[in-house]
Image (cartoon, rainbow, N blue to C red):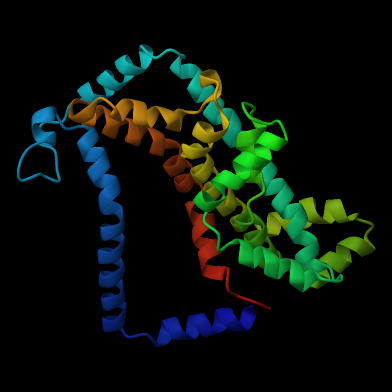
Length: 291
């Protein structure tokens, strides 16, 4: 890892000023292009109806208003199930899923990264292969499994499929491989058990990885509208994302309220990203480095 860092530093020192300017301009244009949909959604949330349907459409808002948010809250107050119930379900499922996924992924990744046993490489190849499957492809098999296990209309049908995804295991394993073996051997000589070595030594050293994993799990769980619709039939156990189609079902007249709902749903993931931004960037910078 030290040699890789020195190589990166030498490349940065040898890069010309013109090259830095070109790279900065390219990254600025690319990042601006990526953030445009988010800005457009926020702008639409504050547009009155006449600006929403103006032709040609405008990217910015001339007369911002909070009417879309007021209409959204008034609409949700008339729902059969209180909005607070949807909110509680979303928070509960997201928190439980995130904690279980990080804990179990870390516990499974540690032996794969730092212990040698039979079929270890084969198991990791299966994990890598599983990353090729899109989550939507597995909806029907998940439904059959949840039905056979009698877990429909239970929180477990929303939590367990997300906990069992392999992205976290893959990410944590790759990062734990960078932890020096000498540190683990010193901990074992001092009498630390494998659990203490994992939670008190390894986990602080791979903090950028599990904070990035927290961001990914929260994003996927908080915004998941398919699992509650598929696995939950009891309306009082569904989560906030299922309200999105209900808000948009009013047609064009609810376009502003629908945009306001979208802004409301992205507040939590963006807040977590801002909190863990430095660690996420550190993960992206060092995820490919090896000792």
